[in-house]
Length: 170
Image (cartoon, rainbow, N blue to C red):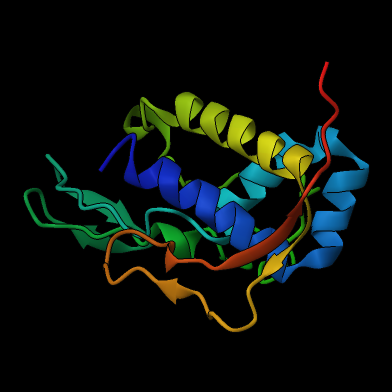
């Protein structure tokens, strides 16, 4: 899953988020330096991984409740990244959100080793996409389909329409 599912879903989710929020796409086109922040917001708003199983090695108390050692815990990453206690206006997609302490790639000792690579791949793919295509939009006759999976989140099919930019041979 790591290194393929997460990056694929990050890129697809970014395209979907930007097309569903054309004001944010226009903002990104006018200020390309917002791309790293836009990627972080996609990771928060439409997390590529929705949950991750964990098993504590010792008893752990969380908000007054005891989780016994050895019991399966299912942290809901997608839900945590929409927590209104942590994110003002959590349901809004905002590519300039700051701070953005999402946990899409885990946290602390459980941080994803490939997070930097995934962000880099997304930055390269999205830069290329935005530079090479104009009039990018969702295909109106082909609604997008979500993945049929419980743990990952992203489109299984995402129809888009665009006009290629004209290029001059050098």
